[in-house]
Image: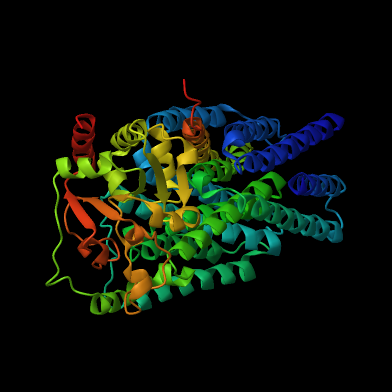
Length: 127
Length: 473
């Protein structure tokens, strides 16, 4: 429940960030605001992460690692923009390599996490 | 214009949805029953984030994106499907490398991009960019080194040489110094020297990754892999700050927290501080002096038939798996033996030390793969009092985590480390390839106790023999 509330908090912060972005940048004070909100988002997410992850049992530490590894490949999002934006060709190509590397991480990470979690079973009821 | 705003709104909604999916997905991991569903939710979140990004108005052409996605999937999918469970630590290490490579490339590309933007990135973005590239680059090589050590093409022993500390310190302060200089000089717009400084900083960070992991031994890899996990997350978060993207900040923070907690837990389980794990190899000489010698002590070796007798008639068996089980791929033979004992009316439990194996939870995954139900697996705290009541403790290729010296010998390098109280069992059977010491490089008194029988050989071969013998009882 606390996790859900924190998630909502993070979401609210995200919305705040978006709206302040929309108002943008002409005045430098708005820019500072947006960046303060980013710090806010980081803190809330880190606290949420701490709360949840301390509750993950040692039994599932390897899947946890594989999963967070896959999630950390969220840099795919940034890579996609660089590969597709109007930039010099060599930067687009760097972006393409980054997209490929991050995709390996995302696809491989989630597939293997699922493969592991599929194996965890309770004792079957005697037949 | 309105179209663009609606598009931007859609992107943000997708990102918020993805953040919630990641958080709820991780929450699923707190229980084995909900874990799989949770991770499917997280994967859906990732898909949402990707779709949202594809609609970003900055994107003008899709061919490079598509090539990248296709190539990445073509490599990632077989990696996910085919890698055996025993190779999981290496796979996670190499996976960190790919993630870090992406982060670093983004950092470099953004830095180059801001050279064409008048006014430059500004202080905050330059701080984030530099941090991202610094951490990304050292995670690339650090993960590669960890991968090499786990895979075995780089020696698992701590590598040290004279002057190492000095060189490491010079490289480290060089990189940090350049980072600070970059923030001071490049924030307001670029100069010619900026490019060189940035390049040198990136190269130094790559060197740091190597020098950081080189002196760390194979048994400390659980901490290193967790730490690299944390770095990869922090680098992703920094990327978020650099490009003003909240989903990166959220996901990176979650990953950073996870890796950080795991490294702390692992260090605790080895009774060592973070700093000691990272810089412990430099104190390696001390361990050799205080370790007790085994001269004059004798072990008792038994045959598989003999071991089968004892195990077959035991009522209460606790199995202690270690890295040796993973190396021999003996988990299926272990499960067969456990089922056999249960069929004969005995009780079997597994005692899992937090740092058994090469990554957090390594043993649990292997046993789950062999169909051992997870309610048979117990943590150190849950099972340590139970060794008193157990007839046979079967130690499978575990060594340092069972060494009573951790409790009794203040001079031992592992003194104070939490261990499994295997010596409390009525009888101990140790399956081991030979008398080689564990990764701490010290003798294990457990092997010389009167109640201990040594069963030498490859864990898988030996256990299969024991299974055959128990069947014939």
